[in-house]
Image 1 (cartoon, rainbow, N blue to C red):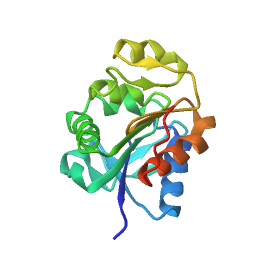
Image 2: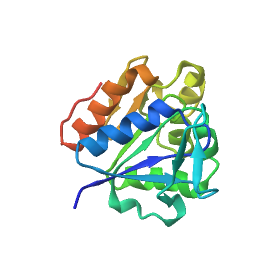
Image 3: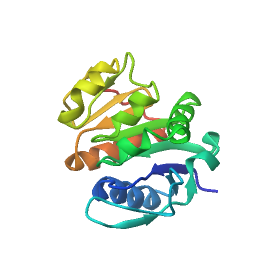
Length: 175
């Protein structure tokens, strides 16, 4: 049985930050479970690309996931309003899984209480939010702090996915 990765989704997700990891992790042999808030079955990206959730966050078991990947766009603002989704991120991380967020997605990490005392990056417009959540902001394409992995923009996706895959393979790379 392939290890599972939760890929979160909500309306107005960034299509590159969702579909690049979706295909990259499937290619690497992971079962990618699309986890939504459960508000609806289909969510649309900022440009209208649809995606169907596999399961609502409230119906997941955090222990089944090796990682949770949170794409950016405006979706993280909806995701962080959903207690079950925030709890899923917190619990995957608490149980030793990887919590990975790109662009605006560190908003969800902040709501889950995972940024305090950590190093992280994000889209520059939410730098203050990351710092106010207790993180040291680092302007780099990818920042790895233990099992917390963050990146800034779609341009960083190759490094972001390499860092997640490396962490899942047991590599210790830290920035």
